Length: 89
Image (cartoon, rainbow, N blue to C red; front, side):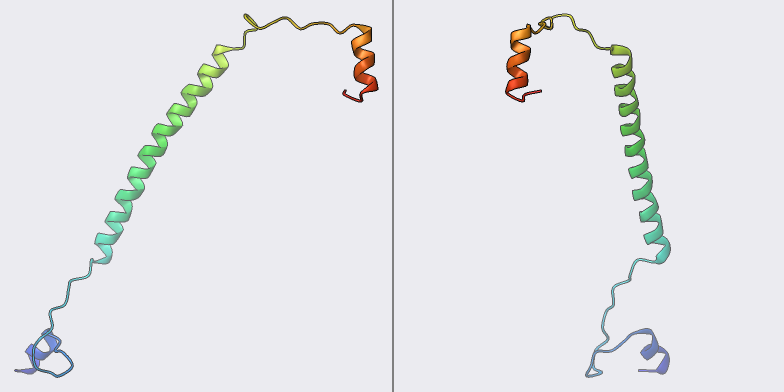
């Protein structure tokens, strides 16, 4: 084996056979993958924000209605006195 071949292929500990090395993903490839994940996350976050805005608008415009709710009963003086004595205010 020549010096050029030895530099191109690392050999195992005994020096007998060349060892195959896996190509690690380059920094650019990893950065592109990270950018893709960020873009996907931002798209999902934008969709969720639109849904939150729609719910806020619906809640604001929907208002509250007391229709169907039982009317509040006024307390009699006796009921009020019983609550005061029971310290239930």
